[in-house]
Image (cartoon, rainbow, N blue to C red; front, side, top):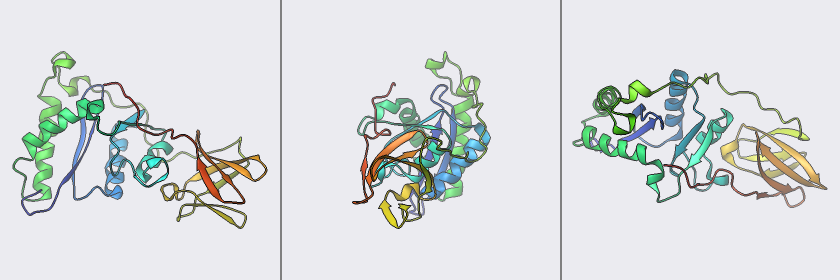
Length: 239
């Protein structure tokens, strides 16, 4: 909590290999719109990662959406970024990031600044010291900035999606539905505006896919989606 009694939600992103602190943004909420802005700027500056590891909270996941995906996570998938979710209650699966967070809170938030601008200035100072002045034993006593390498995958906006092995390509409506003829199938609002591929595998039984992921089947008569096994669920991850 800042001195003016407003809560500050730091959005932090680190490079797993080098421990380099890519960003620490003082945000007023966990709103997805704020996170989109931060990640887009980060991708423009640093390139696209192969994977992003996160916990299961907002804005990285959505408890009531299909496969607990959030719009932010769907956007990552569109960009070809793999999702790694730690198991609930197992912060050690993201231990390097958690240790950084403890240091950040101790050195940059206690006591908290009076407003967001001052708090962001503290975070910026912390980033400078953490990356350039603080050696790590696991890095052979090098600082993260000496080890970090930006991604070679440039951010160029969203690529087109093609489904050459499906019967139809359908854009999910803003209310999260797949419309096939006059029939509407409830899908998920986190995919609103996204193109999915559908393929009839039996009479009136359709498979729904998003990019390379098969998500589930729906019966055109009942119009009920039956999800497949969650391909994005928490996994046992290496430390």
